[in-house]
Length: 381
Ligand code: GLA
Image (tube, rainbow, N blue to C red; front, side, top):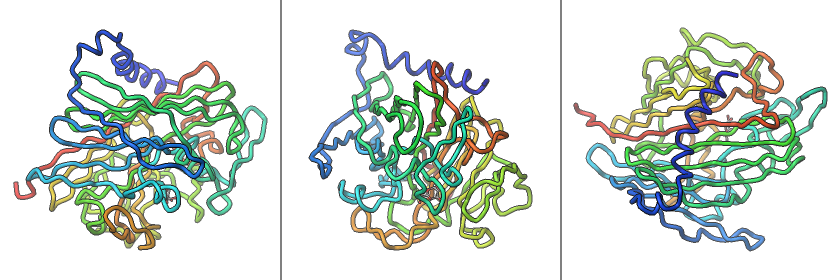
C-alpha cells in the first residue's frame, strides 16, 4: 500500500528527532515550555495528569492522560488577543460524565461500523452497538475513555507529550493486542502535530482520529455558522439514515456539501438534512501530508488549516449539541456551537472492500499524521 510507505517515510523523519540520544536532547534548548499538573482522579483513584504546552508566541495546548484528550487550545486573534478555541470542561468530572468526545483521541475505529459487525480472514467479529444498531468511535469504552501513559517530548522547535496505550485482544470485540502511540507536538510555528502509530499481533481494523470541537471565535461564544470553510474534496461517501455509507463514492458538484471554494458553514446548511456530518474523500489524500481543510472566522481573523495523511475527513457541524451541556467557564453549548474536522479513513471500511483498507496486520506499522495550523489575518485587509 503506497500510502503506508509514503507515510512511513514522512513520520519516520520526525520520530528520529524524538529519539535523539540523551546528551543531544540536553544540549537542545526546547523553546516550547512543558508543565505537568494534576487534573483530578478517576472513580478508581487513578490520578489524571494534564500537560500544558506553551510556545514562544504564547499558543497553549493542554492535553490529559484520560483519553489522550486535548483539553484546551489558546490561540491569538488578529490583534493578538488569546482565546480558548476548543469546547470542553474546566475539570475532569465533565469529561467522565457528559462529553460527546470533546478533544478526544478516537479508536480503535473512528466513526461507524454497520451493526457492529465485520468479517476478517473468514472470521466474523461482533463489536458493541453503541449508536443505535451501529458501532461508533470504538464502542462503549473506546480510546477516549481509557488512561494513557505519558512522557514529555522535547525537541528543538517543538515540545509535547507521547501517549501510549495497549488495547488488549478482545477489547470492545476487536481482535489482537494493539499497542498505540499518540504524540501531540506543539511547534514554534503554531502547529499542533498529532502522530499516530500502532502495532498488532493479530489482523485488526484500525482507524484513529482526533475529535476536537472548534469555535475559532472562542469556545461558548456562539455558533460556528459564519465560519468560512474550504475542504479539498470533490467526492464524498453518501450514507443511509443511520449514517452508514452505502458504498458509493459520489461527486459533490452542485451539492451544498461542495466546499472546494470557501463557503460559510451556515450558508447552505438548511439544505442538508440534519446538518453536516459527512465523510469527504480528500483530493490526493492518503499517504502524503496534504492540506485537507481551511477554516477562517471573519471577526477574530483566526484561521485553522488541517493537514493530514488520511484519505478522508469527517466534517461534523455540532448538530447533536442541544444546550444540555454546560462547558468551560459556565458556557452552555447549543446546536452548532462547535465544528469537528476529523481526518480518518472512511466509515465502515471493514465492510466496504472498495474503500482504502483499514486492516493492520502483524509486522506492519500503522502511521498517520494530522497537523492543525493556526494563524490570524486582519479581517479588514
Ligand atoms: C462524529 C460523528 C457524529 C457524532 C459525533 C459525536 O463526528 O460523525 O455523528 O456521533 O461524532 O457526537
